[in-house]
Amino acid sequence: MKLPLLTMRAAATLLAVCFFLPLRSCAGVDDTAFSVYDWPSFEGLPAVFLFVWPLVTALFFHTHKFSTTPWGLVTQLTMCAATLGAIAWFVSWGDAIRYGAFVAYVAVFLYIAGLIVYFRQVKLLSMASSDRVV
Image (cartoon, rainbow, N blue to C red; front, side):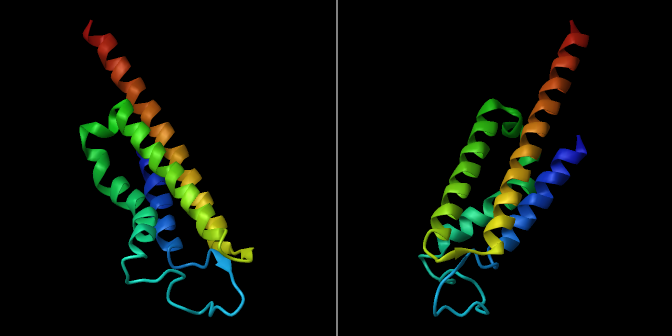
């Protein structure tokens, strides 16, 4: 049961680090900048949210009962889809895809895999414990 959570936490940390990696390449843009987003700014806030929400969720949310419900799974999968879409949108601004986008995609897919395995293990354990009660 710990391996899926560790996978999710590692993937979430990797995705948070990807906020500082260049996702795209543009002519005339300094690649040595602190971040590819206008940060700190109000416009950069959605980008921060899309890269950091899995870390907050993986560290604090899985102690809550909501994480083992189908709605918890659907909510997190929807947020993963939004993150993948946002990364694709951020990449579309530039000329070429950079390594940050590839690392971010891998991190999100690892998070999804860990989430599905975690959800299956929790459901299998709850089904096994309900069989013993009867």
